[in-house]
Amino acid sequence: MVNTNPSESTGLLAGKKMLVTGIANDQSIAYGCAKAFRAMGAELAITYLNDKARAHVEPLAQALGAQLFMPLDVTEPASVDALFAAITAQWGRLDSVLHSIAFAPKADLQGRLTDCSRTGFLTAMDVSCYSFIDLARRAEPLMGQGGTLFTMSFYGANQVVDHYNVMGPVKAALESSVRYLARELGPQGIRVYAVSPGPIRTRAASGLAEFDALMERAAAKAPTHSVASIDDVGQATALLASDGARMITGSTIYVDGGYHIVD
Image 1 (tube, helix red, strand yellow):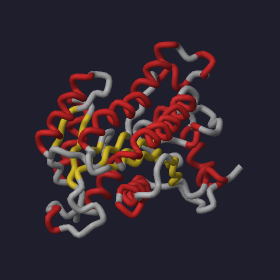
Image 2 (image 1 turned 30 degrees about the horizontal axis):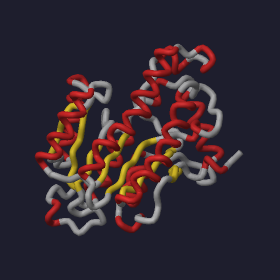
Image 3 (image 1 turned 180 degrees about the vertical axis):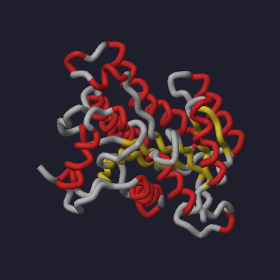
């Protein structure tokens, strides 16, 4: 059972204030991370996209003892404003932000990059990449004692993955943004990471064509002969959020059983 009293925790993240975005249900990578953060003693602020998503996310937030539970639509500046106003009022500081948000219109995601519409490309870049930069900008003033920023990537950022299409260039931009943010925010003690799991069966992944085949290939080719779970990703991310990782920043951290090293 998760300890919901941070004052009784002696975990690696005891007392840290952590914002978790992108939980859609109990299969979300962000939920795996939130569970690991909480188990290691962190205090959580958890967001949900809209009223439809709230029904799935609220019970999870309650079970984790989240101190803040708020809507977040990264395409609406007022929504982001309200979230950070609440964090400032509740905590007055922030130690970590987890960005696990990505979206592309279905027609553009499932079609060739060559045929991607301008609107689809800009939407995918705005929601999946710019929103991380925006969260970093807003978090910076609350991280006076340093902090960590995480976003979720995929090896399709660096290698051509069939059916990943427009999300390949978008994730490449996201990983580049991690490096630039790490350079700019490093003097303030803020570390920045892209965490890159292999294929995981989440709601977002269900939008990719032939995803089952991708899962099978990854499991067969990875040195571990298995794919990561949301809990594997959560544990690795939580360790990066701890003070023991203070000299690691600007990197893409693969949590994929070594699949990315195999040709």
